[in-house]
Length: 157
Image (cartoon, rainbow, N blue to C red; front, side, top):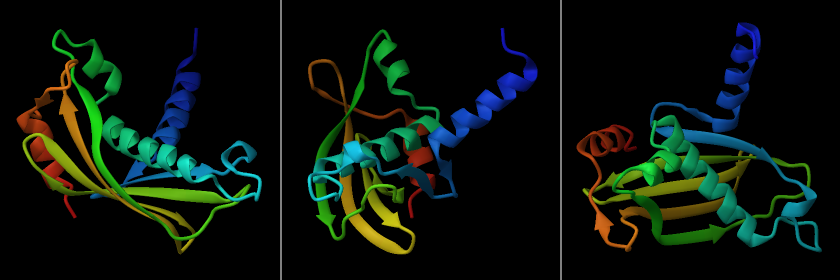
């Protein structure tokens, strides 16, 4: 059983894992490991997609929208990427620390449009635009609850 001090430490660690919101944007940092790279020592292009996914997922988490809760509902819904455009501008390398920033660009009844950027310090490595949507288990589009639309609209920037 954890003491109150241990619970507090655990909460701080969990908060650090989730990144942070600075008002309109979510930020998440990660270190580049050997497993992220190809034979040249640069980050393999598909690994950036995983970093971007974590940024979007943690934006949802900090908004109290957890994938596990959505899937456990009586009428489950799932977030899916409907569209993504990505520009790889520069490569990260082993031991670099990169930051993933995610902003809500536009929100509609059943879709959220996000802009994402991966940086190393002031250097932009990757820029992406993503359209995310909700679907039911059969893939049928679902509308977002009004409070989500309002929350996302409040984060547009």
